[in-house]
Image 1 (spheres, rainbow, N blue to C red):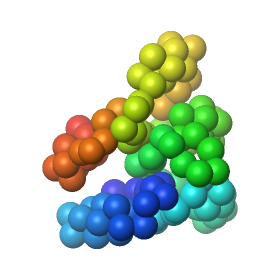
Image 2: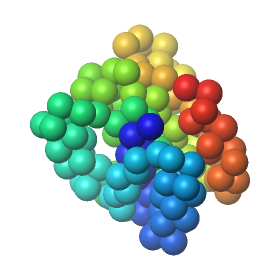
Image 3: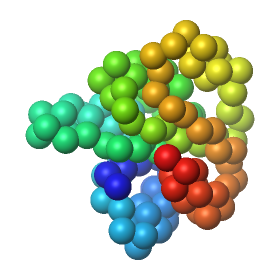
Image 4: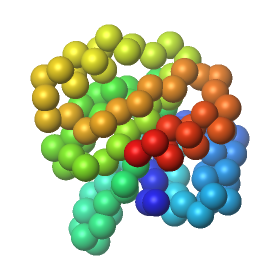
Amino acid sequence: MRILLVEDDEDLRTEIREYLQRRGHEVTACGSLDDARTAVQRLAAGNSSAEAIVCDVNLPDGNGIDFYAGAAAKLPACHWVLMSGAHDAARIDGLKARGGMPRCTIIEKPMSLRTLNGALNRM
């Protein structure tokens, strides 16, 4: 599976990327939303796309929920996993209720990597 990982904590990003790669996934890891937006454009230009996006919600340069809302039209078949220590499930549910939003799973941090892997395997 092609996965775009967006996590600003370098140690956690490395740990998640390596864990997912050991399970056979192709992972593009980004430390910011700006890098993630560039990666989405690059993947689209190459006629490929991430099948899943694993994104932290609270990032220094923005909010993962806003990224989810803004990228939905470009990535309608993509499964999203949003990770947060203080997630806003009601806001995500409100976005999904509008319709046209890609599938989204919320995982509360701290999380186990098995929990993340389980969310990706349920796609």
